[in-house]
Each structure stands twice: as C-alpha cells, then as structure tokens.
Image: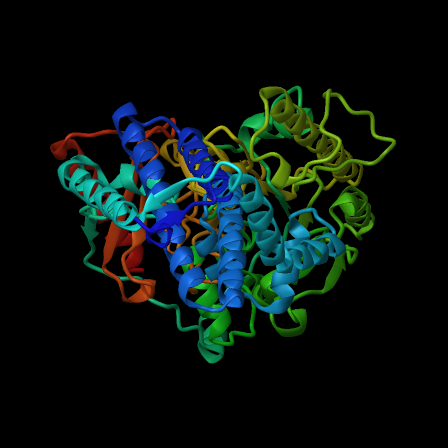
Length: 628
C-alpha cells in the first residue's frame, strides 16, 4: 500500500494533548463530592473516550489540511488546536474554583461592561500588569503550538507511527458508535441531579443522549417589581414615634457563621450569645452584589438586574422609608460599592439618599484592614445623636484576608500569598494555612467590633442602639470541592451570621429563631421601631416578630451581571437546588431540579415517593413566594 494512503501520526504532540486533557477532566471528576462509584466510573470512561475521539478527529482534519491545502492553513490549524488545548487547562481551573466551565465564564464576561470586567480581574488578586502579560502570552500560544508540533515531529519521525487511512477512520467511527450504544444502555439509569453534577467535567460537557430532567411546574411565575417614583411617594407613610434609636448594620465580607467562635471572634461570639441569633441564618446569595441588594431592598436577588435595567433612580425602598421618617443615612465602606454600579442602585442617583459617605478609594485588598480601621474610627467619632442609620461595609475578611502589620496574629502557620490559579490542588496543610489567614483577619475585625461596642457604652447609648451583624456570604475552603465563594450554593458559602441587638423588649416567637435570611433584616427593624404600622413597599422579607412567619429561605447563585437563574429553597430540613428552564426567568413556570440535599448539605438519594413529598412542599412554598 502506498505511503500516501497512511496517516503518519505525530504521537508525541497529540499524545501529550490527549493525556493532559484526559487527566485534567478525570481530576475534576475525583474532586466532585462523592455520589456513587458506579456513576463516577461511567463518567471517567466517558472522559477517556471523548478525549480519544477528540484527538482522533483533530488528527484526521490535520491530515486532510496538510495534504490538500497550503501549509499556512495547516499551521493556522495547529495554532488553533494548541489554543483549544489551553482552554482545557483553563476549564480545569475554573471548574475547580468556580464550578463554571470556560464557556459559561465567556458568556458571563461578554455580558459585562468594561469597568466591571476590570474589577473582576482586580478581585482575583493578580495585578493588572500581570493580566496584560497573560493576555499577550495567550496571543502567542498559536505560535508556540506550531513550534512544539514541528519540534516533536522531528523526534517522532525517528520512530514513525503510521496507520492506514481507512483503519483510522473506521476506528474513530467505532469509538463514536460504541460510546453512543453505551449511553443508550446506561443513560436511563442516571439520575438528573447526578448528571448535572458531573457533566461540566466532561470534555464535551454532555453525553450523546439527553437525561430526562426532573421538573417542578409552578402555578405562579416571578413578577418583575415595577417601581414607580410617584407610587413610592404616596405609599411610604410617615409614622409618629417617640424615639428614633440609632441603627448600626455591619455587612462583613465573606463572614462565615461557623468561624464565629470564642477562640477566633470572642467579641462577636459574646454578642451572639447575649442577643438574637438563629439556628440557621442564610445569605440570599453566594456573591456580594446580590446579597447587598437583598439586605437593602428586602427583595430576592432575582430582581436586582431588572430594577437596574429599568432605570430606577430612587435607591433602596427601606432606606427611602427611613429617610421619610427623619433618619439620616450614613455609609462607611471599605468595599468598592461602584462594582455593578451598586452604589447608585442602593442609594439612588448621585447617592442622594446618603447624608454622609466614606469609602476606601484604593481598591487594593491589602489596604482593606487600614480602611476598616478608618471606617470604625469615623463611626466612633460620629455625633451620637439619635435618628441615624449607619451602614458599615468591612472588607478585611475578603480574599486575601488582611490585617495591619502591627496586629499580633493568633493562628499559624499562614499562607503568605494566595493565588487562586495555584491552589486548584492544595494539600491539607496548605488549605489550613489559608484558613489561618482567614481566622486572623476575622480576629482583627473582631477587635474592631470590640472597639465599637466599647465606644457605645462609653457614650451611654449602647442599650438603646439597634445593632445588626451579618456577612454578605460565606467562604469555602474545599469543604464541598470549591474555594472562596460565588461558585456553587454550598452550605459554607451561604451560612452567615445574622445577629440582632434590638433592645430589652424584643420577644420573638420561638419558631422564628429557626431560620432567617437577609431579606428579613429591615422588616424586623421596622417592626421593632414602628410597631405594627404599615410600611408599604414591595418586600419578600418578613419580620422575625411576625406570628406564622414563613419558614423557608431562597438563595441565588452568582451569575455575573445578569439575573440569577439558579437558586435553592431551604426549609431548615431539606435544601432543594433549582434552575429556571428558560433564560428569561420571569417567563418561566418550570424549574429544573438540580439536587435535593439534607441539613448537612449532602445529596439525598430519595425514592420516587419521598422525592415527590419534598417537591410538593417546595412547589407550595415557591407558589407562595412568587405570588407576592
């Protein structure tokens, strides 16, 4: 048979790509929390065969281009193939840290404004010049691919490997057919929640046959709040009250409830024990801007992008109510509130709701501890007259977790530098060193809180003051296979402190201390200050004083600058993660069940009857929530 009827394979070049793609995708499968070994083995084999089909197809296309087209087209193809190989590497990192495939990430980035995109790069902790170097290096990847191919070809030609064209094509076809037939026999046994868990790790992000989705059909779809300036003015009543106690709301970045201990945060721990706390307090999102929205609007994060898009310029509805009733609104922040233009969404156009405003303008995570100290000092120095709301955004506990050089740290050893790209795989010792950084940052913030409490007591205004402490979201250290936050709806990323000090006469029904979330904060404050008066504005939250308060919480997953489309509903026993079936969530009455979990955040493998019992209660709660 003439040599031109054979494919000569550069087995070094394609072999390295095959091994790397296969190993990274299989590694992602092993990092997934345990479900069932049979499922894991099924998807591991899928990774191997998909990668093999991918490489064989690339070899065939390359052979055809090299034989029948000018060399520059073949070189361009080689460059693109090597770039495609690099996307698998990036995909591995993104799935490991963010539980996002590279294609999901591109979709989010394309929807971002340029300023928000730059802010996202800053939040990674890498300096902007490094990102520029990485971008330029990415542009040179195709040239590097061509060089590596030609170099490896010279080496592989010393011991050439050739396969007849027809054998190679038939072999690739048999691989595809065998994978299809295997899917045909196995896929009916795969649960939809298991499939969703694993599919992002596959090279193709899918198998040949679709898995039947578990769907919850709702009676009501979400309604977009149509906020109107005139209606706002007519419905927000003025209430006569004898006292206007100062309100202090601390919103601490990445504050995880189970790290509020006597050893790490003794002052916050004492505050929790002496005041109002809950069996389960959850953020309404696993990311910052959506949680800010829920706290300050008392609305679920589903609405934030729509309200912003519709040009609402009046700011937070609860803040408008306080303003109408004579409160001065003061913000002290280390957080960059301009991210996603949240400052205007929360405080109105040109921040018109605010009477005073302090912000750290450096935007550097290493300066957060200094900015937090300045914010607390400014808070302490503020006149102590009544009728003030203080919103204090603290940032030291945000990745990279900072404290001043002269602060004596308690927890060692610590990670000196945390680069997300370098901790896609880390030993237990390295993760513990990162946790210690986080513990030390919390310990520093706790010392600032002690300083604040001491100042209130010195001024004799502590007893009358309303104090709320919460975190915008939690933080994960690979407890559920991810790092930091904004990746998936794990318990550790959404379990936050919500502590209230409301004064000596704050009797709350016992059942209301079981579960709460951010949207309940302002309704509870208003109920305490204004009694049973009407405060008429769109609101998902309920006062913790309310008899027969709803006993479920909704929390949404990060979706960039877009409307969240994945969320969980939690009743204190069962946590059901759901996803809207349509891109426009306000036009969707169908929800896909992603997974059902228990109070420990473990996947529940229920029989058909028990699953329907759980989902029927979910449907009832969601119909109630979405009808408001």
